[in-house]
Image (cartoon, rainbow, N blue to C red):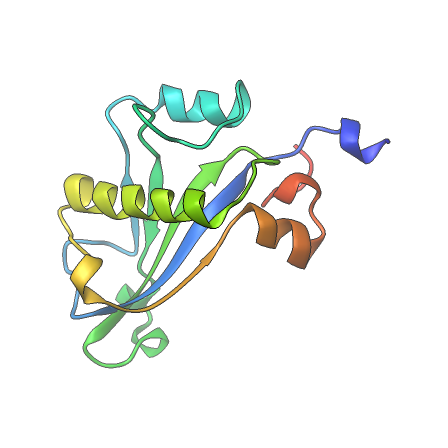
Length: 145
């Protein structure tokens, strides 16, 4: 059908985290980039796949509480991570859990912040939410490319 033949923008894996303590190491916007990001972008645009194995995920980190303290309780930070993904990927709990671990590893190794033991609240969204909640074909986060 017409819509299935269209090209869609990337989807995304999002983590919404409530974190105990302040995070002075992170700015409002932080990019936790791998040394070689080409394999991840190839997994989005050329050969759709989850960033697994040697494909290190590109991670954007947003800490809105750095500029608006009202979005988190005193002594806590609100953190959002975003990993771009190819639309149409099979979004399973196991794949999400594996990517979550890789995201937390990336924030630790690339931005110098280990969030794991400080997470007090957590939600996630991924391909299936963009498809179901926003009726986006393939779970695109951005719609038509």
